[in-house]
Length: 449
Ligand code: ADP
Ligand code: MG
Image (tube, rainbow, N blue to C red; front, side, top):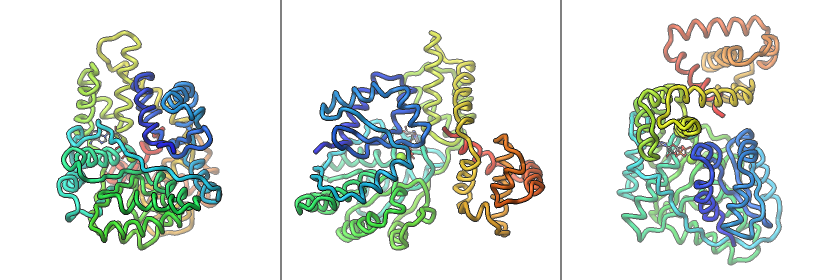
């Protein structure tokens, strides 16, 4: 059976040569293989707009690259997060019999090493924990649970551990899978009535393994069967003294519909968060990246990008690539501030189109760890009133909606309540640093493409 991860990694090597660095960083890198069926490869991506972009810009190139690596693949489909969930649901429902896949041998991305990871205040603890596991697996840090927002370096650290182990402990069997892959393999093993497929699955995840890394575990929410299986896999490996490393985009407490017993398993070892990098760290990351990619770019350009792009390292890098790309289009030897403005304009415009009240509400909920029902509901405790007012403020500021409609969104509140919230928060921003930071962080989150 096809090893989709390997095929995709090889196709990426081709694509990296064929498309511009910026396009690769922005659109192709966020694709992940999730399935192959009857000549079609299924790739997931982070949003609807990312899907539209990648299909518009690179459909032909991706198709050709996949076909070149694996002639069986004649087409591919990109699924946005909702479609991906539905796809998995459908798979779970179907009981078609298909042969299970053989064990993939995962190649760690050799750019994702500890040496290439810039350490700053936002990530020094998580870096220390990851390094600790790499140097002393099976010891105290087990499991290691890393969590934090998108594009902050979780996958980079998992690969860094993998690369380190591959080099220093080549005898160890290290398996890195995304949660999607784990789910997929589990479903495949269920679908197959052959006991051989089940045995292969068990060998892969329980017997033939020393270190198991699962990335993006948050996708396990709402998948009861997979949670159950993961729970048993976890216990089995843990009892045998194997190392488990997990990454998630949020704290287990915030993963909806995650079984309590899994939450408690996750917290048995070290749980470490990774924060948004501060300005100095962003600067250092950009400098390192410019050096790696041999970009010619002035210090002031780097400072400006570090200032403007403050929530996501993937975007930070993408922005640098984009700025250098604009400069090269104009035949300039070095990127200048003008190129930054041009690149920023594009990002700001695309995100404006996608911005909706729902998106702002989602970001506020995520930031304050509150539910949408509470946010737009009637509760009056401070923990909920403050996020609600900030949310109203942001919707007023960021969207062109009538006040009455904003009141409607919040459970039919009067427009004067919206005005009050807007005024209150705009006063608070001036005197309360915490609120100021929250507002600016949520704005950046919502503006993310
Ligand atoms: P996540 O898995 O948290 O969404 P990734 O690990 O994919 O994020 O990181 C996104 C990009 O940012 C990658 O290209 C990664 O190499 C880079 N990156 C993240 N953190 C750092 C860091 N501290 N130093 C250098 N590069 C980083
Ligand atoms: Mg990741």
